[in-house]
Image 1 (cartoon, rainbow, N blue to C red):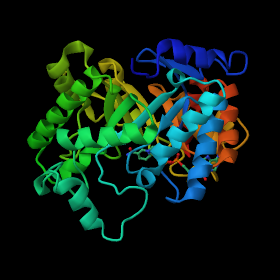
Image 2: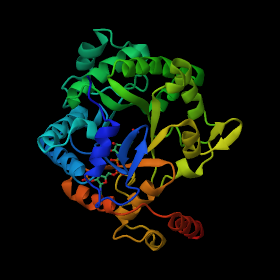
Image 3: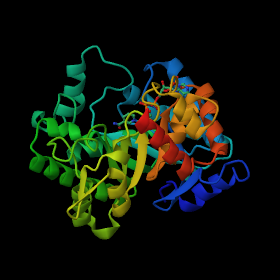
Length: 369
Ligand SMILES: NC(=O)c1ccc[n+]([C@@H]2O[C@H](COP(=O)([O-])OP(=O)(O)OC[C@H]3O[C@@H](n4cnc5c(N)ncnc54)[C@H](OP(=O)(O)O)[C@@H]3O)[C@@H](O)[C@H]2O)c1
C-alpha cells in the first residue's frame, strides 16, 4: 500500500499539539488536517550548507506544529526535495510517520540535477531530448513544459528525491508561463492533456491530489489573455474524472502587498464576478498562499496601523497572521531555510487566527492610510 497523508495520520499529528496549538491553527482540507503555516523551500543556494540548514528547518517545523512541506523539482536544482526527504527520514526516527505530513511539490520547469552542469545544453539533450521525453515544440520560454510524458518523468524524479511512493499535492508549476507562447484554446488543451495524466497518476497512487501553483495567472485582470479562470480549469478536471476529480489545490501569492485573491473580482462564475477566494470555495478547491512574507519584504517596517489592528510582537508575525487569517486561505507558506525563522514563526501556532473585527480594522485603516 502506498503511503500518503491520511485523515488519521494528520489528526494524530494535530493531537500531539493539543493544549499548545491555538484553535484555528489546524484546519481540515480535502479530508486532511493541515497546519495554517507551511514551510516553503524555494530560496537559498544550491549547496551542502543550505541543504543541512533546510533539513534542520523542516525537521524543526514538523516538531513545532507545521505539517505542510512545499517544494518544486527545480527548487535549488532538486536539492530542496531531497532535503524534505532527508527530514522525513529524521522525523521517522523521532516517532513521526509519513501519514502525518502533507508533502507538496511541483513540475513544469526544466532543471539540472544538484548543480548547474558545465554544458547545460548537452545535459538536457542527453537526459530529455534524446530519449524523447520532450521535443523542441513542447517547450515554452526555453524552460517550461507540461506534456504528459515530461510530467511522468518529473513526477518519477520527484518521488525519488523525496524518497516517497506518493506525493500528496502535485502542482503544475506556473502553468500560465505557457500563455506567453500558446493561444488560450491551445493552453486549455495542454492543461486537459496534463490533467488526464495527473488523474491517471492519482489512480495509480503516485499522487493524492493535483493542482496549479501560480504566480500571475490568478492575479490578472478579468479580461487579460494571460489570466486563468478557475471554473474553466475545474470543468476540465470534471470532464475527465467527474465530480470526484483530484484537481483540488491552487497555490498563489498572497501577502500584505499582494492581496488580489481576496480583493480582485477577476473570476467569472455563472456570469458573476468572483474573487479567486470565492471561486475556489464554490468549486471545492483549497487555496494555499505562497510568498506570505513577499520574499521577506513584509517581515519588517510595516505601517503602524497593521500592529494596531493585529497586535502581536513583530512585523513578520503580523504579516503571517494576515495571510493565515484570511478567509479562504488554508495554509500560508513561508520560506524558512533557518531554524531561527522556524522558531520565530512557529510562535503563531499558539495564536488563534485574527478575528473578523481585527481584519475589518486592518482594511478600514489600510484604505484611509
Ligand atoms: N509560483 C510558485 O509556485 C511559488 C512562487 C513563490 C513561492 N512559492 C512557495 O511559497 C514559499 C514561500 O515563498 P518564498 O519562500 O518565495 O517567500 P516568503 O515566504 O515570502 O519569504 C521567505 C524569506 O523570508 C525569510 N524569513 C522567514 N521567516 C522570517 C522571519 N520571521 N523574519 C524575517 N525573515 C524571515 C526567509 O529567510 P530564511 O530562508 O533565511 O529562513 C526567506 O528569505 C516558497 O518557498 C515556495 O515553496 C511558490
